[in-house]
Amino acid sequence: MGIDLSKCTAIVTGGSKGYGAGISEALKAKGVDVWITGRNEKDLKATAQRMDVHFVKADITKGEDWDSLLEEVLKISGRLDILINNAGAAINIASTEEQTDEDITESITVNLIGPIMGCSRAARIMQKQKSGTIINISSVCARQAWPGWSVYSAAKGGLVQFSKGLYTELRESGVRVTSVIPSWGATEFGTTARMERRDAETSAKCIQPLELGDIIANICSIPSHLEIQEITILPLIQEIIPL
Image (tube, rainbow, N blue to C red; front, top):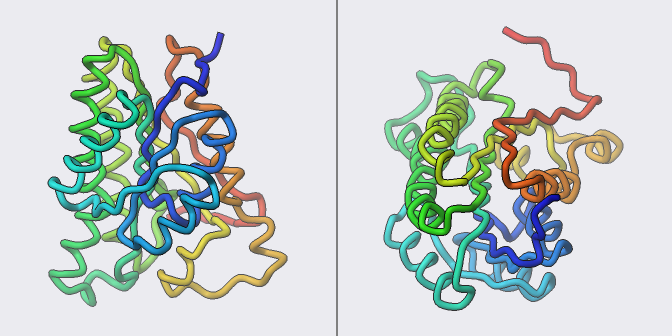
């Protein structure tokens, strides 16, 4: 029998828009007690009110923000069953020689170090509970190679490998870790990454936020003795020619 998500509490980072909002909506529909985080309080508040979920303004690259977030979640909800590390950013999609030291540091920090800091804290809580699910949202860039994406890809590839190692550490405590590796999505990511704008027909055939949310909710609800190590999701409209 699968896990009854209506008894679970979840944190979704970057939960105010895009994939994060879709994930939060799907979990909420399953009865999960959802907490969303992000750096834009206005967007967080609007999404939280629309979905009837909790929100805490937090920067995932700051350990003290993680501490404050988890303290609030445990104080109000009493437990943490699901952590979705969704927050990430393109920073500067450009050839490596064009990257500044600041670009490189920020990309690695927001896409890899921040999620690891969250996992470290969630692991302590979940180990004591002897249960929990951590899902780290990576990117198809962790599996393929394109010019301009090298630094971002390094961070997302690192997140996949970190997730494997974390699973080996937490398995005996009944805690599961999954890497979700999506490609083209109907989110604002392409705009911030200065990708060529897709037309409405193409966008409609990309991964929709709620579609990804439903997949993640299903991963969280599989029987507690089973583990999905990683899953890659591609829209049929995207042609990928590997390196």
